[in-house]
Image (cartoon, rainbow, N blue to C red; front, side, top):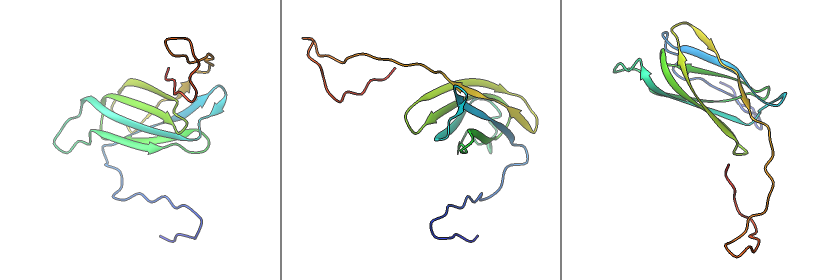
Length: 130
């Protein structure tokens, strides 16, 4: 592998299990791709053999697409989180087979308001989770 100064090189070590199921799709917010994406999966029920990997993660690409190799079929919890903090989770049943398509759309919306204390005084720089 050759790494040029200032560039990023992605290297896959070990390869993918021959029984793996490749879950792939596109993540959008509105019509735009979510580009700063981390995808994480946890096996809830299914292929829990001694060698079964029970979790997996990947980063999305700039076009909003992702590919995630899961160790086998079963019920999986998938979490899609942007670096900006937006997140959505889905529980899906992944069947046997070489691949499984799964696209995700982040909800669009806006929350506006003012954060106040018990006396109604405004509070600056407060984090609000919805």
